Length: 428
Image (cartoon, rainbow, N blue to C red):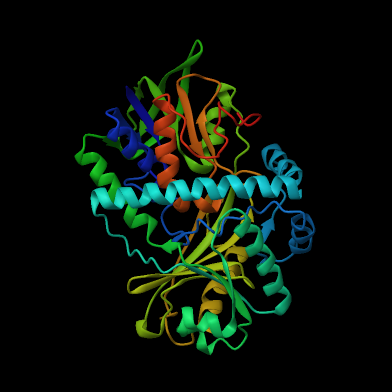
C-alpha cells in the first residue's frame, strides 16, 4: 500500500521504518526541516519500561490542588478557557481509582516490554549509535516516607513481573558511586533492565535509514487538513513553508503521528481524541568532570526530574505544565522551572557540569488522561492514529511503530494492550 505518515518524531519515523520493512510505499510529512525537532528533540532520554506509572492515581487530585499556585510544582495545571483541557481533566479524574491505575500500569508495562524488544531489533538491524547506556534506571528518595512509598510502588510493579529492587543508601552507592556527595540520599529503587540514550540522535539516524530504503520525506510542509471522501480520507493538504505552494498528497492509508497536534487535526473529521499537551522542560549541560558524573540514568523523586548521561553531556529533564500549546522559555514560570533543573543538578553533583550556558528546551508531551497511547484505526477505515504517548514516547516509540504496522497489515500484535478500533473502546 501507499501510506502517508504525518509526523517525523520518534513515533512517526518508527512507524515508517516498520511499514517499509513490510513492503509498503511510505511518505513522511513534517513541518520542521528535519526529523525529531519537536517533542523528540531534547527529552529525558530514558527507556523507562519499568518506571511507567501513570499520573492518574487516587492520591493525584489532592496533589494537583496543592500545586496550583506553585511555579515550581512537578505537575502544574494552568486552567484555560479551553473545553478540550477541561474534558481532559474530567477524564483524568475518572482514571484516579486503584482499579484503573492497576489496569493502566499493566498495559503500559506490556507495551514497554514489546517496544524495548523492537528497539533492540532495530539497533541490531541498523547499527545505529545514540549514546546508549544499558545501565538501568535508579530512582532516588530523600525521606523515609518517600522511600516507603517507592517500596510500595516497587511491590506493585513486581506484581507485573518488573524487576524493581528496593535499595538502601549503601546499595544505591554501589550501583552509582557518583552519588556519594548527596547527603540527603535515603535510598532508592532500581530497575537494571532499563536504559538511556539520545532519542533525537536515534530518530534522525533511523530517518536516514528509512530514506535509503525508499521512504520519501517531505520536510518543511505545514499540514493544513485531511480531506474526507465518503467513509474515508482521500488526501492531505499541505503547504510548503518556503514557497507557499499548496499540494494534496494521496495514499491508500494515512497515519496521524503528530503528537499533541494530532487531536486538533482530526476533529474536523469527527474523530475526537482526548489528547492534550503537557509542557515539559530540559537542560543540557557539558560535563567539566565527566569522570565524576553519573552513568546510571536517575530519577530524582523530590523534584520529579530525570538525569541522563549523553556522552560528554548530561540531560536534566522533567516537570509537567498543562497550559495549552505554548513552548516558550521566556515567561516567569518557564524561567523558574529551567533554573530549577540546573540548580538541582548542581546540588547533587557540585562542579561536575558547566552550568554557565545551559541549553534549555521545552516541548509538548501528547498526554492522555490514563497515560495509555492511542494506537490503531479510527472510525474512518483508512485513517490510523499513533499518538498520546505522554512522557513515554521514547520508551514506547519503536514498539508503537511496530504494533501499528502489524495492525495495518491485518494482524494483532501479541501484547496485552487495548488498541483503538480493536479491544479498546470509547477513545476514538
